[in-house]
Length: 169
Image 1 (cartoon, rainbow, N blue to C red):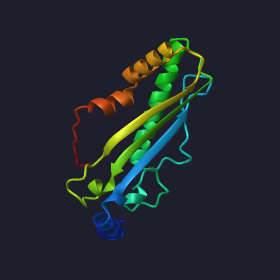
Image 2 (cartoon, rainbow, N blue to C red):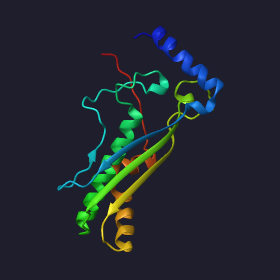
Image 3 (cartoon, rainbow, N blue to C red):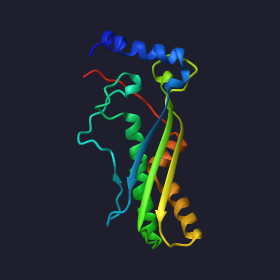
């Protein structure tokens, strides 16, 4: 696909976002499970091949993985593994643990339809649903430690210094 084809494909989408700004607001989701024997989080992606592409809201076919979905899946995986690690360290038996993340995006920003619309997630919500008989103070501590030690959560929360380079090969 070249630039002309891309513009042609995205033109009607951009027009729709211009005419109806709310149509560019999309919520992406990811879920995972910590009910495995080891310290792990099983992601429910429903895809066998990890090939990234454009989100359908920007003209993609929907057959490839969206990097926004992958970011949420990474957060769910990291948070689930961290939760399971913390529960294991605190000796809190989890019969089952569910981790979910939702993120709100305004695709008008990434398509350049509205220069005031942000590019990237405006809000991300992370949720843990656990089946355990542990007392509330243990659950509070598990949540605090999971937040503290989840690499992906902390990376997103603290907005790390970033740099970008391009090299000719």
